[in-house]
Image (cartoon, rainbow, N blue to C red; front, top):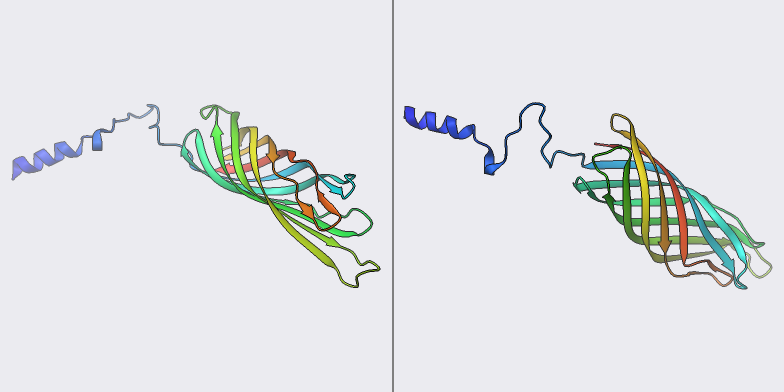
Length: 204
């Protein structure tokens, strides 16, 4: 019995599943990295809206966004984001125009062990549009049109730690999607859209 206890004590000092031992001050194990990231952002978009004659009725939009990701590897994270653009009015008959965006993404960090960190983003999702026409001679009620359209996304960014888990950064994205009709008189403009972001968040 005494020999069995000694044997078990010896076995308990061995690394499980062949994992290597790490001394104090030695490099961290490869899987010891930050997993979660949550960030808020201000966004500036080149999105356009055209009238039925192809004239620009709206050029550009501003908004806010939220993003959360979970890292599977030090260089690879998967997540989701949502953007909400400021309500706008344009044309003689439009009371309110709103746009929102929801999607999933993969964040590929090109320099995970440095600060600042460079990264790329690949994403896809849906745009949601809402356009409310004002009262006209032909209608005594507000007429509201809602549409949605899919998009794909490619982006590049740079972020840096400023205090413990807190970071700031900037990102530029290109979105591509089809033109979408917004009722009888308007449609979204170009099939592509440039978007800039100023980001801040925490990693834990």
